[in-house]
Length: 619
Image 1 (cartoon, rainbow, N blue to C red):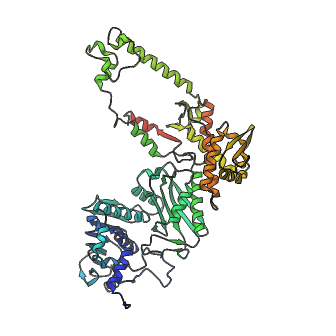
Image 2 (tube, helix red, strand yellow):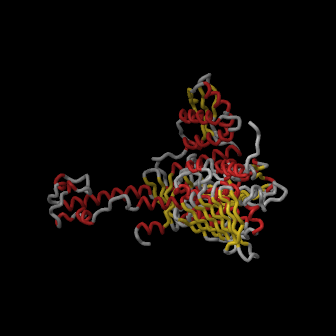
Image 3 (cartoon, rainbow, N blue to C red):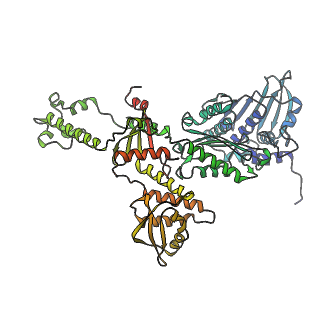
């Protein structure tokens, strides 16, 4: 076949396939154009999930009438100099408007401040009409109707109106976070109105805008990030480990103000939270990277969501180091959402409340209501004497005796676990230990709250941090076994363990080969106390086998430390003395990341006094 030049319409439609994936892509391009024009207010109206109508209005600088034709022409832009590496605007390719116009009915109205009136230009399926005068205020109105009418095959790939409308909201929110001084509003027949008022500049305005998008809980559970290395500035906020989500939709990254979805940045975020959040949970973060435009390439894909850094190692190291340092300096904090979840579990929404009449009968009012049948009551005690079960003589006295005995036993059990801590400990972050319940949960009291600590999860984190510190300082003390423990293993597992024997020795675990299919354990870490050596060695062999790669040494060490910590932590069911409970609380306060265990679960939940008062209807 002969080679021929493609028509301008076909060229634009091909470009539209890359730039305009769905209605949300149209909104993104038009909103970015409005921001580049200096707008302080941007209004979006949609219908049919954006497939029927998208209208974006702004109060920006506008487009001169003699440049409207160029605005909808391919590769025409006012945002790029002769240096393609010096990109300081959100848009620069000059493809958005012509691509949109080639697959829809596009109308652009604009008026600059000096003009007496506005001008309008239309592009219908690539066919140009105008420009012609039109009455309007200053700024620009871009209206897109019947998206993909010129390429109907693309409509088959669109989702429901609701799903497309939701995608548009997500795009606007993602862009709005980076520009808190701009007011954004979204309305239309296919959605609930959304209005993001301008919050101003600076960290306060930025945090308020983030709160508008992510919810009021985020500022209460966020840590400020501010770091700089070799000309690259990182700022923003990261949620504490206990404040996490089931997906990564609430992770926002910006490079020079541009929202991006870069795999390298996501990988750095996962690395920063690797040992404080479970693998199936995701942190909530908003990060801003600012650097010389020459050090980053944003011209990787027409959608401009991917970027390439000249020094990716520098960026990754900056993100990981800054987040970990911020988490370490933030002290111990519990997510406020944990208290809210506790309150919800206490509420009677899913529990049938005790009926007043039944409660009255339960209090021994059989004399008042002689028809009461104790055998049929769901509130009957299980330890009544046979005579009392039939509601005979002495029924009320039997009930009272049963309640008294139960209360006495409960009080005795509580006194056994009480901790008479000094009053000054109440001002500590985790307060003074008051009791241990179910031989696993420590209840402590601060000046304004009640704290419940999972002793196993908390001690597991403390042991894990001590093991990690042993990698960078002196080795942990070891206790020699009187008789070495022999563990039978496959030969390949024996080889892997022996290869890492030197590293394990730093943890206080002394091993050596005992024939082709066994390991002899001669020393165990003193801090772990009495452990199941057989199970520990087998678990370590599995961890090393899974992560034993040429570049996975650090991962191996972290997983080995986590495995040993899990085996050596205080077990659920162990009674602790008051001094032991308070010592555990003080260690938690001094250990970075102790708000979560190695698996990402919270180690404690704090319930403020105001929350407790809400439970009892005092507020």
